[in-house]
Image (tube, rainbow, N blue to C red):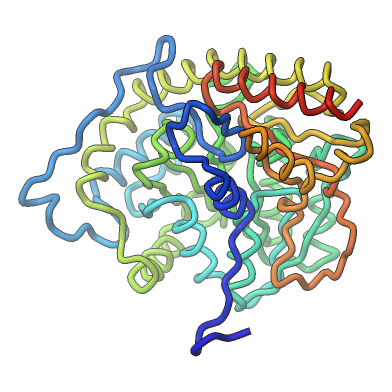
Length: 413
């Protein structure tokens, strides 16, 4: 429906959740609330974390426009980090020409979507809520949903994904790894098989790796499909990451895309009309954060701090009666089923609304049933009985929220 020539633009899942919370009195820094909904990590010092960026300088150079593709020194730093972490044994190396800088993950994904040709693009259920409007607004391609099986805890299978590429005639595939919201991880031989299968079929892969430092069950510093790219300029593998989660600077809105040089040129061109480029001064300030030494310290400190919070939240949720198939292997979410809750608490949206009255925020599972344009006319999504809880905040905030969730459940028994 139009109003004065403008169409209605719906709020994406998490934006809807936060708007409802603010209507109930939530604001950032309010000690009375526990925000287990928004996907943001705590931003202060962690044990063994490197020194945090505390100020950003502005001079005559950084006061100028940044190149739309990004500051060259930052692009070089990104390329060097990936070569050092994931490609020391590869003759083909990333250069700054394989990197585009954007103002946040959504901006990076919008640029990519604007460059995708007229192909079938596969996306997965459940996955990141913002994909829904992203895949709807850019209609030069056809988005096709592929469901992860709930009986395996929404675990991906490289062989089945390759079959989907062939059977659905996919020209591209988009997925988060680690997965938001399930915490499942495609790693090692499984990730290698997925990349190789995509290359065999001729399906471009877009890996959203925004949680690639949050890896718990594997003794690795970080995760990336970059480990299995043979030729950085021939293999159509795109990787998106940024400072938001893995460096714990959501407010800086800096992300990057790695891929073949020709594709990156197109992505930069899309940025010229979509967003104009990221803030120059912030890009300059971010360069030291991308050193391999700093990145390793940040990753290890994250893993040490967040595994404690993961185990704490998981144990408490299970003890309350939530159903979780397994400990999350990555990310900082527990995607919990309400199937064993009292009858009036088994609907994710209703659970969310009742928790707001207790000053606790979660995200209804149905928002992760990515449905661009609402073309699938499903009435009862299989995710209606799920909610997503974040263990991104501090342990004190988690405790506050979990205590109130437990009180809510007890009140309905």
